[in-house]
Length: 102
Image 1 (cartoon, helix red, strand yellow):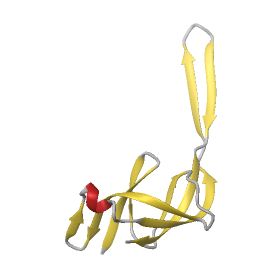
Image 2: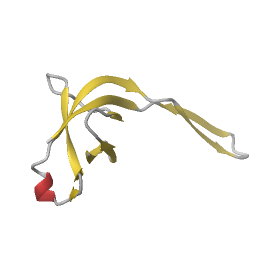
Image 3: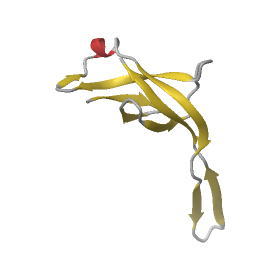
């Protein structure tokens, strides 16, 4: 079993070949592919976490589409002062399918 932990969008995700992952919005190249930076590689019993060895590893993914996350509402309120503020946010996301770990 081969899997990798990749850094994407300020977080780390565990990915395998064929898995579909939702990440923060990333730009794809002209073919619709992206390359993700590995932090850890597990190949059976071999665990690779050395930076020089991980520089040779590439994790490629195909972009399936862009989407937006669910809406969160931020509300601020201060008692007895009449201060109320309401704000919404929807995170921009990208859904990718992992095509290769080499």
